[in-house]
Length: 205
Image 1 (cartoon, rainbow, N blue to C red):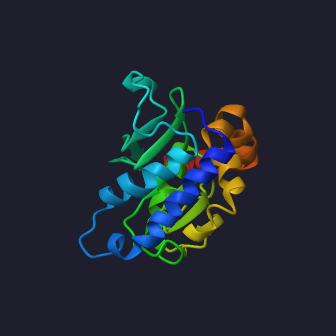
Image 2 (image 1 turned 90 degrees about the vertical axis):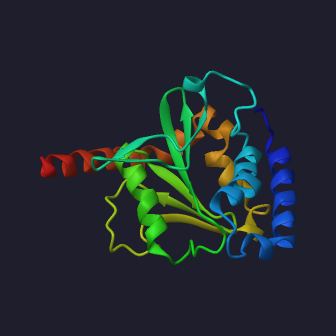
């Protein structure tokens, strides 16, 4: 999906207005994560230029966004909600939550996401329920006792998406990933993180 910064910015602004109007409905008891993903989070990543729904109908092995791909985490099979790839290589993960989860303060979702990134040696990844969005450095070993603020690089509330769009677009848009801007952003973290992952692995052997 070829999309410009301006097109994405307009789309996310409309999406934010839609959410603001329907916020109580999305936060109501019984609203499932899948509904939030379909209505809000999928469109958010589409505004960043990603073909989340595979509208281009590329072969499954060449999809750039894989929903609930299998990932080995400490010997157990897990499934990150979104895997964003270039070819077969994962660039970053995104974990979605239903509206009302406290992304800013709840440590459990952050720990879950960081385990995915750490296990796959992915430098940074995203945690969001759309109302809030956090970007995490995944190069330091996550611990269950870590606070939600641990290794958090960026934090947004949905009202900030339009005005801070460049911060997301410049790193996580499809254009940024394919141009190499994402790799530049992640390079120092990945270099440090790879050695840490390998060292921790050797300790466990």
